[in-house]
Amino acid sequence: MLPPFADIAGVVVLLFALAWFGQRRLIYFPDGRAPDAAAFGLPDAEIDTFETEDGLTLSGWFVPPRARPTGHVVLVFNGNGGHRGHRAALAAQLAARGLGVFLFDYRGYGGGPGLPSETGLARDARAALAYLGGRPDVDVTRIVFFGESLGAAVAVRLAVEFPPAALILRSPFTSLVEIGVRHYPFLPVHWLLRDRYDSIGRIGRVRSPIVVIAGDADRVVPIDDSRTLFEAAPVPRTFVLVHGADHNDEALAEGPAVVRAVLDALRPSAPS
Image 1: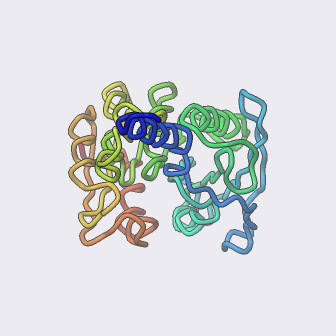
Image 2 (image 1 turned 30 degrees about the vertical axis):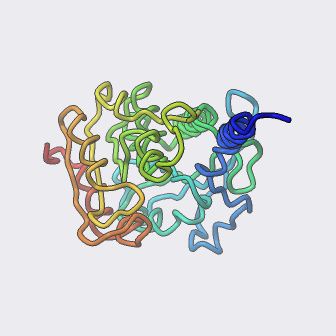
């Protein structure tokens, strides 16, 4: 018969194994259904596909400007849940103000193949940008990155490689490790986390104007975490506070303050 401590050690090893192999189910919450653009209020969206460097075919919607075009196109990097249809309202708001918008789904989301991971999402982001840059109606020097939550980390990583006209980060965090520690304090997150999304380690290498948008009632990414990332960012930079907004509130998803922040970032006199 094994001594009691051996049983305890076995349970601990089992828990660690479950945390290691099952952790991505605690990070990514994809809606695997392929959305219909018209059903989400974007009947004029062009449905496109593009291929990643590891051979996956993903889908996106190119939403043309609905007002006098500004010449800018916003590439949206989704958060960790849902699919591109859940960002349609933001796209409609931006298109109504003359911006083109490209919504796309990461691997495993929106009917796409594959399973999400940090490396995978980075590949998906590069492929989406390559597709957008290859369109004859898009000026690559006027592409804007808009990343929400986990998508902000994806956008930061890509911005280091390919500087956008502006980098707009909604509810960004410093690193997934710090967020993991807050939400799972009973787990050794620093040791176990495979996908780390270290934005705080990358933000200083961004050479584009940066806008950070945060809600002071955010219960997923505390505003102090977003502010810490902002303070580590190089200038020009702008911080936009949305009072009373929680992480998934409409005010932070596509509210007036968010839309205004995007437009302000594209003006030559944008604050720094």
